[in-house]
Length: 47
Image 1: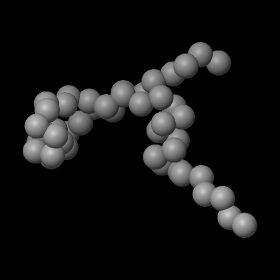
Image 2: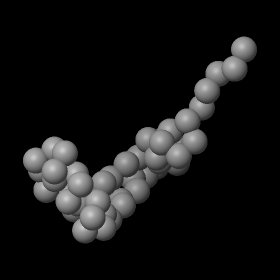
Image 3: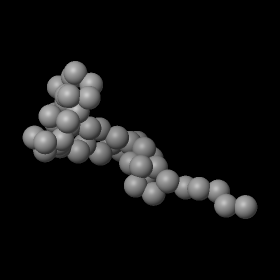
């Protein structure tokens, strides 16, 4: 399976929040499938 990236376009409110926090203009986020899965459903180890 080839590496896939997911591009997420940000809303104007999200863009403004990121610019306020980082001082940088961001139009979208690009994550690998693995990075996106970790953020959506982080795996925890239970003993």
